[in-house]
Length: 346
Image 1 (cartoon, one colour):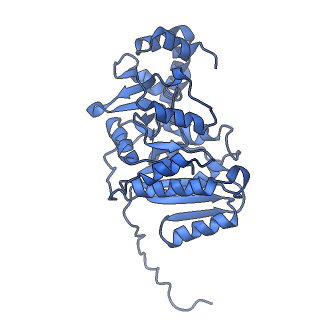
Image 2 (image 1 turned 90 degrees about the horizontal axis):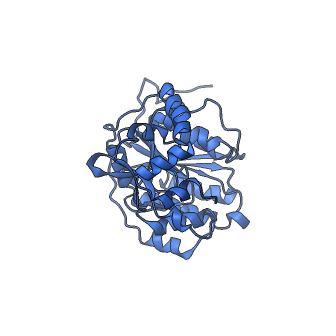
Image 3 (image 1 turned 135 degrees about the vertical axis):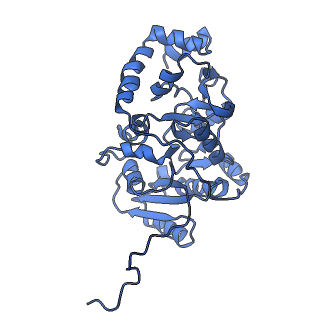
């Protein structure tokens, strides 16, 4: 039985608060012991570092991927207190990528930041990312963390255009200490010296320098790159080819550039809490939030032929060792550095 008239009828439009940037955080904390002992504490640092340091009035989506009841109850409180804008709770483990897909297929914001739940965002991370998008109109994804040796990782379209330009050069790493912390966050005991002595970069408008390549543990994307997503969901909980197919390849299918900021603007924390993390968090300054218009950013379009030319044919050519040695030397690396990049076994 229906009684009365639904007050939403009558062709009333959807009205949402203005926002041009959304952050999506897939979260998997099935328990709070063992490997996941510090996971929630680190996640909270991630969440509140975004809120404190973002410059725009962004919206936050959390996808709970089979989190335990205790964690889900805390997430629901975040929603009630309007700390997060959207919460999706999955009772079954659907995997990292499928968690992201739950949110991303309906996102309307111009920029989409996808981040693991163990990233500590620093002041100016959003400002520095926006600088890169402005300096490089074809940027499709920008990571706030420069990581070693990503210069040939799905960047063939950049090399194809700038191979003979001095805009593309190897430069000194801007923050070696941050690079060392990243290495430790993924289980390395230290960063080899030759991994921190140079990094592939490109110079854009206003002399803005960006690093070649983009990690997928945290990155900001133009919305349209996800038009190139596979139609089906990922078959993996994590790893496999899922991050390549869903996070990385769509950018280059749209002929977008995968770049990182030259300065370090976030830390990958890993799963074990350390005192320095709390110190970094406590030193964050509260930013003033405002609605920022990103409509000026160039829109990318799908170019399958260009992808075939650059990422299949051209990439194979420049990766031949004799030619690669020559190119890297011309792009600023010494003979020793070229050997370390091309021939040394690790």
